[in-house]
Image (cartoon, rainbow, N blue to C red; front, side, top):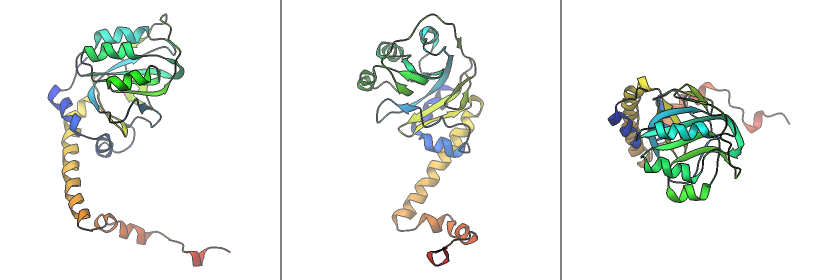
Length: 222
C-alpha cells in the first residue's frame, strides 16, 4: 500500500484528535465513541493497515501483523462483535516488538490489564475473555468500516484519550497544515480568555443568541 510521507505522519503525534476532527468538518471522519482506549494517557498516530476479520476469528489478524511496517496502525473490522477477544497481550507484544504504532478494533479484545501495563495503544469496542477461532479467511488492505468510518489502507489514524480521527492519505499534508493553523489560533484565543474575555462575545455568539427566540420563565405556559 502507499503511505503518506513518514514525516507528515509523525507530525500528527503533536495534534489532538479534537483538532483533526475540527479541521475535517466534524463529521464522517471521527470514529464513534463506543470504541474506547484501553488505558488513560494514550496517544497514537500512524498509517492504517486495514483488516477485515470474521467475527470471533483472528487468523487474518495474525497474518496482518506479519505484513505491517513500523509506524502502522492495525485497523480491524470485526463487525462490532464483542463476545470474543480477538486480540490479546501476546499479539500486542508482537506488534510492539515490531514497532507498530497501535491497534484499533471494531470488536472486543482481552488481557486488558496487561495491555494497559505495557502501554501499547489499543482501542476497542469491548473487553471479553473468550478466545478466538482460527478457521475463517479475511482480507488485508481493503476498505473497512470501523466505528462508522470508512478507513482505507494508508489513511492516517490519530488518537488520544478523547477518541480517534481518521485522515485520508491524500489529504494528510493539507489536514496537517490546517491543524497547525487551528492550534496557533487557539493559542491566541487562550491568551484572551486568560485575560477575562468571554468566548461568547469573542466568537460572536451573542449575535447568534439575539437571532434566536429565547423564552423566559415569564413566557412559559403555567
